[in-house]
Image (cartoon, rainbow, N blue to C red; front, side):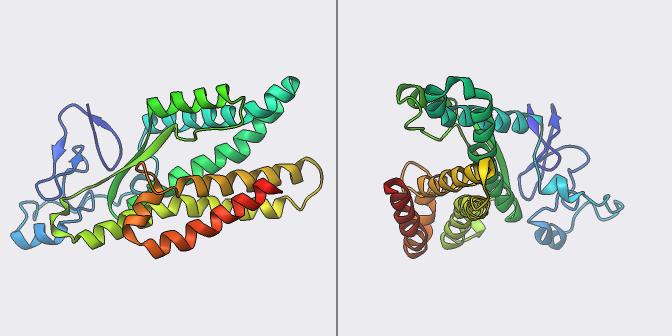
Amino acid sequence: MARCEVCGSEEELPFVCSYCKGIFCAEHRLPEAHSCPMINIARTIGSTYADVPPPPVLKKTRMQGITGKVEVEHLLLAWLVLSLCFSLRYIFEIPSALPLLFGISLGTVGVGFIVHELTHKFTAQRYGFWSEFRIWPLGLVMTVLFSVISAGQFVFAAPGATYVKPRYSASSSSQVTEDKQNGIISLAGPLSNVALAIIFLLVSEASGLLGSLGALGFQVNLWLAAFNMIPFGGMDGQKVLSWSILIWAAFTIPLWVMVAIQTVV
C-alpha cells in the first residue's frame, strides 16, 4: 500500500503528480498542496488547476517531521535494541544493575542514535527529498550477535538507516549538485553526534551519577560520529568522501585521533 509523501497516510489508490512523480493522497494531490519542486514548470505549461481555490496552509510539522506510525515503531525498536547491546558490557559485570545501566544507555547511546538519524531525515527534507527511517533486519541481527558474542565489548551499531530519495527526477540537476546534497545530508548525522558529545562533555563536569552519565555520553557520541565516517559500505563517510575529500579528511581525522586518545586514557 502506497503512502502519501506529505502526511504519511496510506492510500489504496494514490495520486501520482504529473510533474515530480511523487505519490500523494487526495488532499495533497495538487502541485500547490505538496509544494511540488517542479511547480514553476507546472505553472509555465499551464496547470489545469488554475480555477481550483488555493489549498489550506500545510503544517510545518507535516512537511518536516516524522512520517507516520511505522517509522516511529522502527525508530523505537532500533533505539531499544542498540541501547540494550551497549549496556551488555556492564550487565555482565554487574547483573543487578540492569535497569540502571539500560536507562543510562537509553539516555546516551539511544539519544545519540535517534538524533543522528533524525538529523539525516530533517536535512534531507529541507532539500525536498523523501526520507524515512527503516529497520535493517540483517543489521539488527548483527548488532545483537556481535554484542552478545563479545560480551558487549564490540557493537556493530547498524540496526537501521534513514533512506533518502528525491521527490523528482534528478536528470535536471548536475551530478556535482547531487553529490553535494548527499554529502551534506550524510555529514549532518555525525555532526549532530559531535554536538551531543560537546553537551555531554560539559555535563561530565558535574559530580556523582550525572557526571558519569556525561562522561559516557561524550565517549559514545564521539565514537558514533567517528564510526559513521568510515568511508565504505554505504556509510556516511563514503558519501561525504564522494562529495569532498578535503571535508571528509578535515572532519574524520580529528575524530579518530580523539577516539584513539579516549581509548588509551
